[in-house]
Length: 73
Image 1: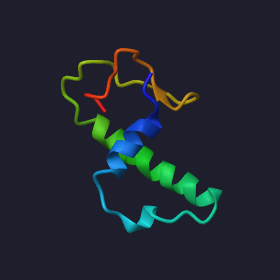
Image 2: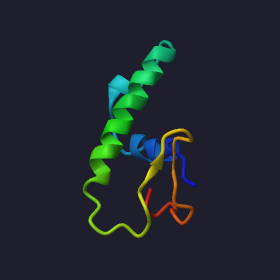
Image 3: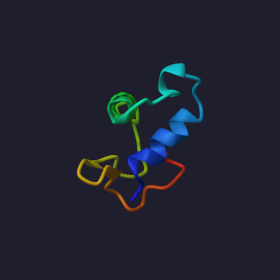
């Protein structure tokens, strides 16, 4: 399974956003993750023909399809 944090890391490597640069406490990190999850949910809607399932296990914070690889990330 691919962890959502893996996708977030790939996303953050491609953007320059100062808002996510500094986390002063755990609450900031929670807000960041909510932002990233919103972007992920919006991006998933644009996949017309995915090669694997894009279902997410919210308890594990990971995609459920074991066939998902870094190409999909």
